[in-house]
Image: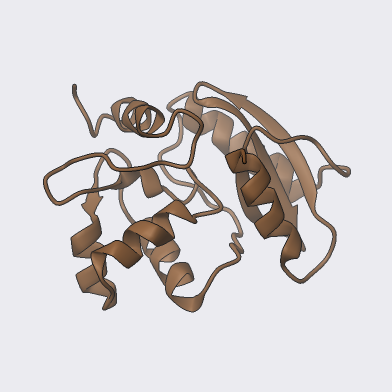
Length: 168
């Protein structure tokens, strides 16, 4: 199953209004922003356009393009990822990891009262990669482990290099 298909199924099962999708072509591959009820609910790898884009999708695309052009280091968008309360707390915390820096699974787990494995699994289920920067979470020894994009760890490495967090 393609990651985009998995993310699409998860976003479609949530409650609320109709989903709208807007494609974005960036240096890390083709992606699709997904919006429901005025908030971004997913950023899918691959995907497709659907529905007429509204102001939230247009603004999210603009902010992603600024990020790709190195003119933005943080996002200011309404987000509503579908997940458990613990997952949503982690995803919210990940948005606070500064551009060009990393945090470890263990540090986040201790801070949130979870175990590192749970943090890793929740990172893997993050429906809004890049905007919710799960690529900034690494192993305690700095190791890069898993990433949802086609190309996996290599895309994570490229994102960290892009931000200057990884100099290799």
